[in-house]
Length: 228
Image 1 (cartoon, helix red, strand yellow):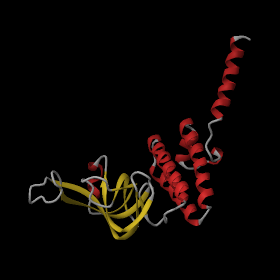
Image 2 (tube, rainbow, N blue to C red; image 1 turned 120 degrees about the vertical axis):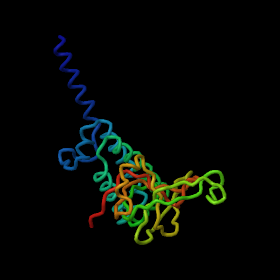
Image 3 (spheres, helix red, strand yellow; image 1 turned 60 degrees about the horizontal axis):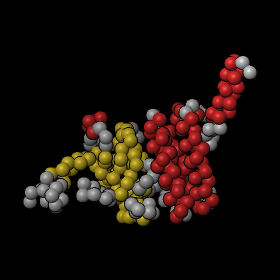
Image 4 (tube, rainbow, N blue to C red; image 1 turned 135 degrees about the vertical axis):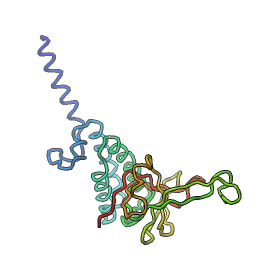
């Protein structure tokens, strides 16, 4: 076999290998920017295919209920609205996999109207800054604790909320919350949004250190001015 024939055969084999990594949806019908990014990236396509298996398992456990349908619809909507980079999509797949695994193991789907630890959310409210006591005792600035200033999102009404167990991931309903501490990589990026009505998009998680001042915090992916 000459070199050209070997090269052609190699390309054919490579094509078969690449095509074996396909997304769970029909890429010929992809319209969203995120969907096109997934279809053009072997790693993302593989993650999508793997996630589908976890999705099927969770659906078998809980049934294709309205709550489960809404959970999936909201998750996809969040990804398509907020992710503009491969890193964001990868993170979404990683966290979505965990969420579906917990649904599959517990048989429980939290209502889509709630803020749920470990489930990407979009929450509407106003950003405020407040100061709390820090080291050494986290009790009183007046008595010598270091003042620590944090950003919070305050909502107009309390929102149904669920926290997760840090070990098992199981969800527990807690009192409705109207204040969420925000964790942001670049606070300067959003300083002009303080005091304004916004929608915060991010990953809620449960309080677990002295620096956490609300039952649920939100690791922020994006903040948009609310124009409604």
